[in-house]
Length: 171
Image 1 (cartoon, rainbow, N blue to C red):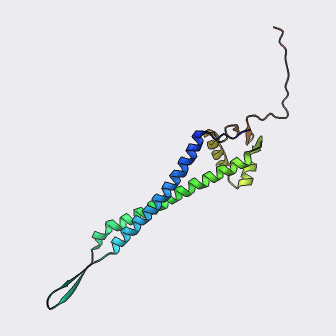
Image 2: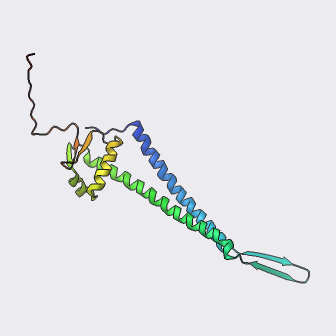
């Protein structure tokens, strides 16, 4: 039994981590842009003029139609930030699930999907999908999913009920 970590897989892991980092940074930038738009949305212009005999302050309020693009921009940027934070969180959660599966499977020749479900608390459907993705990406290339038995089995596993016979062919 061996867990492969190919250069491709290492590269994929670091690319996913980098993407998660970028998504988080973009989320923070989006929130900053939303804040700037809201500041501009509520901003009013004040101008003070002085003359020989008077001092006059003029405050100009912008109409709602002038401020509307800033409000829409702020709403879009906040929505984008929320989406990016959710995507980043999902990537970290999936990576953590993969690490749990790998730790549980390591050293076993066969484990049922139901046992994995009981240990991790995830549904059978989620576990099967995650394990298939791990097999496809060669994180656990020495395993396969037996859907009939509902188990993940090592390719090197030899069942106890199997027997070996040596047959000599006289031809």
